[in-house]
Length: 147
Image (tube, rainbow, N blue to C red; front, side, top):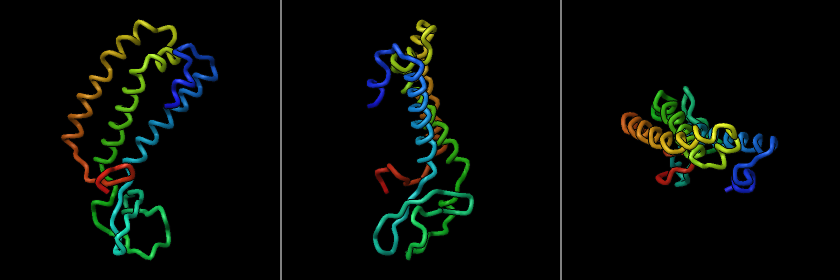
């Protein structure tokens, strides 16, 4: 959504390249972060969100009158890291499939980037889809429709 106003159709200045890098880093970090969130329904019927840790769910609103569940599923695990890394890879693959991003970040390698735009998203899609099937998750974090 913000990319067209930053990129100028692939002809970027130094400042625009920095802004694209920051935008990509912010997007990738949010993909990573949101895979470590989960939710539960409190006794009052409301949905509460938190961050999964090795000790359990750390709710975003401290001091709640609702009892936070101590179940094992609310602890961080290997699958969380797999999903977070794969989510970041999918985000990067989608970002690099846009000619405005690759033209700004790699202006001298236009021919190589055409090949990357054609093959990288497909390869990442196949690998990540396979890994998402092998390592399913039961997280109902922020942004999930089944919370």
